[in-house]
Image (cartoon, rainbow, N blue to C red; front, side):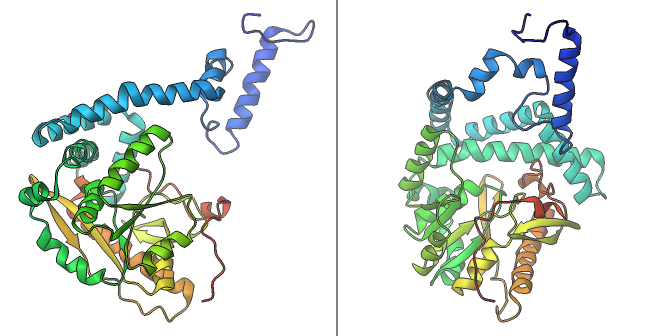
Length: 369
């Protein structure tokens, strides 16, 4: 047999292949989707190359090193040396390429925009989707350039010092800061860490490539930014607040955890983490929204008033109220400048009832109400 399969005597080959296909279809139909991380074509999964690509540890390490040394490192180094205007133009070009070639993300963006803005024309929603792809790509390219600048260069170019004064008042004794993948979220944390050294602790997930992760950590260290990763102990968040730091979180993505609540977001039930509200309630620290909106060739620092809640009512009701309150602040801003949010992310993937199937209980802690 060409594929090396072993069959019983007198068993037709066609029947064997049909059984294999039926088995694959049966697995795929369990959740209505193809098996995760597997190609749709069974013939591809059975090849030695696929097994080498997905399961051989040494080959995985080779892939990661190759990506880092021959793709990530030269590309990021080259972009970081460009003038800012050129880097932004290049980012915009990459974003358009992503829009046209990332079919799944493009369809997701247009679907989300149609639901959020039914009153807008199809052409207008398509324009917003393209701009969203471009903005996300520009975030990457311009951050590489600006991360090499000194504080004096940044202040001379963007005049941000005055805009930080409202945050100084809110964060005097520590606070929980809500931000989003909006404007330039990467520079938001970098700027604050540079202007207020040692004051920021940002929540983040680790990159799957160890070398890229090490590169990101070096940059964050240069910016005097403490990072609390998703696999760290939850106590690290409370410790940062106890040390009077600003704890920066980005809760605007789809949640796959039992520790969330459904809030109204763009007139749709949206499963959202209650972690920021829980941390603010436990630590008695302010909970507020902060964003870095792109305006022309510069940025505008947006600091919204803290969420007003006394935390003396029912615990679950308090968490829901605070989560819905900061979600409303984000929605109002996204409606004003929809081009600057990541519409190509499947924000509404988790539907009512889906949260019960999640077994991740990392953030579940016994606490009195």
